[in-house]
Image (cartoon, rainbow, N blue to C red; front, side, top):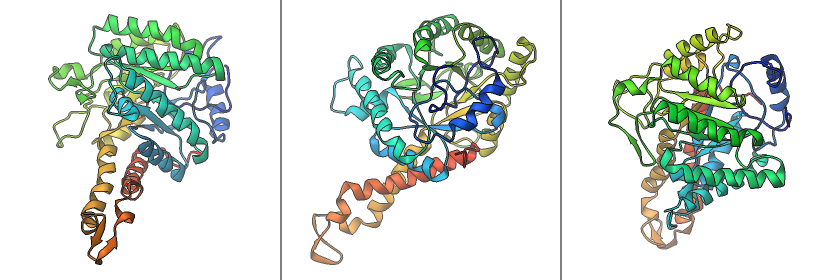
Length: 383
């Protein structure tokens, strides 16, 4: 195992023990050491398992402001955090005024986000996993660009720029999905990059990928499909995770409109455990997509059944707006002109319209929401 202490990652992996794969007892022992190294940015080769009974939220960031607010929350509750960028979020990080016809803005923005987090994370004193979110087949040029950046960074620093990347080829036939993941995982594994893949569609719409009209049955992954993924990827290496569908939908909807069944994840664990000879009760490490709007009970059930990472985006987007919205509404009289407010016609308003003032209010409310996500997942006070 290359580079253990000093690197932290708590996503998921295959847990088949072999001569080249650390045993679970070894991995759990190392985890306690690594959690004490607070000045880390990217995790590579520490694997753990769900018996720890907590998961880490993965928060999408679109700017340095959002990233800093997420880090602030993790620092305050003394817990690790996963910071991730989507294809659209990456383009925004680089600048909406840039062309992106060849994914150039998304590639540049993803690199900029990763480098920013690497620069400031040690000051917050928390372990951070750098991750890229959903990548559909049409977005593979973005994925390729990030891998090239990882390879270049690895040559100079001995580790990749990102901790992990996600491939979401769930819209494609299963065989094509798995084959493409195998192709890229062979390239990623030597660098120590983790692969998260999705089998079973997440409903709703995100970053231009619209699954709002898919048949409901496609939102629920079958145990046999999970096992096929596990078999193919574990032949290459242990550093992979599976986002299995259990009715997940991106966005927030009225109660009752989304039928989450996190209990199904337990059946996946049981099926895989039997296939592996019963060595581990829950051998799969799973990812919860579309976590925004989920009930605390649904989240708890998912964690109990082996979810170690939950994506949160819609709820944190709303939280960021709330702080800014409330400030603008409460200080409306001070935001109508540069000079002149309820205190007098000659009174300046710079201390109200300075972006550092009102953007900061959004950071505060977003940070508070990240703490709630961590609490729901049991991710509090682990450092």
